[in-house]
Image (cartoon, rainbow, N blue to C red; front, side, top):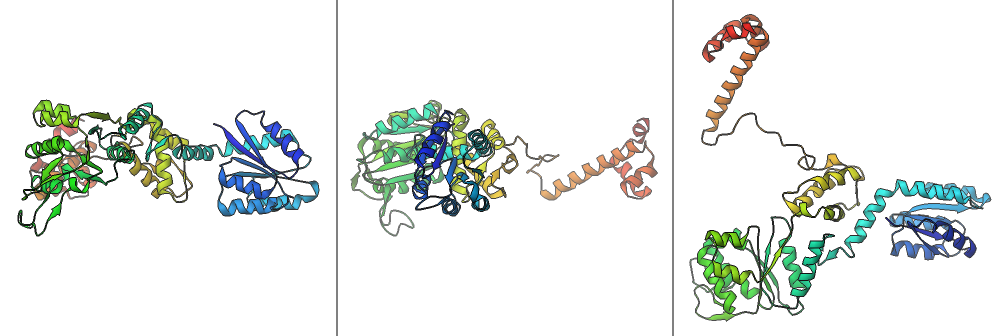
Length: 461
């Protein structure tokens, strides 16, 4: 990981000598500034790990520069340099938040040791800063974040689709970001000046789906008090996204097929044919081809939708994206910009994420809420991520039985087992068993008889 160092000194010779020395470490990138004002501008424009600043400078001196750093909460570690007669100023700078100070003329070996120590102490902070920079640069595409080569291939395909009106089918597990991909296709299409309209086909009952998609005329059915435009009309000139298209009932599949073929439809209860210019993007978390082979999805509709297919990989197949996405969600849900410890990152990377990106987002939101310190630790993550199995009941819950009956049965079973174990511990002695149970001898004797417990077998043990 490359680390950046900024040298702020009004002495040209000192700046260049120090820059030349530090650049012998190929992992450091060194910049310079001739005064505090220019140095502050560079600190605001670019993230630096280390600042080495003189105290006495024109325009903005070192003390005021450090005050500005603290005021603006710039993530840089400041090391100050000063002449022998200015030790009090250096101590004042330390109180303001400077990491260390060195007197001039500089002991270059000591300076290198101080820099290396500071870099070690801020390694986690620099890794987070680097992740945030990556979020804003080459690993971000239309609000989709990924380092994964397969995802980058999808990004390239999306860009190519932007110049067409081709129907697209997106398949992927729940939580993989199918709607984000659909929106990215729409946003990559300069000719699509209309709206992006999303419809969750699984959330609408069959009797409402047709009206939702195609609209209805006044009086078309009970409750239709006025004309209503459907989602296809609202998406005219833009994109309609049919999420969970595999759940569309058979009666609606035929009507959807006609719209895909002709780009025409009638509102429910209407006779006028309405023509629309709309791109159709469908998505499903199941294999449409398998549904078609099973006979629950029309073959002709499948081929109409399956013009260009995008298979979204689950998060477990793109582990390199987990730190990137986790850092993004932390910056989203933590206003104070918490850090994620290496141990917590390790837990995140080795978890299978059955709920994919949506589950990761929920986990990081939870971590932000439960973390009181500045660093998210493994214990702040959900138990499932840590490999802790959720506590299960020691008895089955049978919903076919009334609750009162089930409670009575569980109580009887537990009571009989408790007395059986107490008898074993007392080697069949009823008096000692009664003492363990906190009951009278008569009560224990009655229960032993009721439950048919064999005292003889307890004596033998």
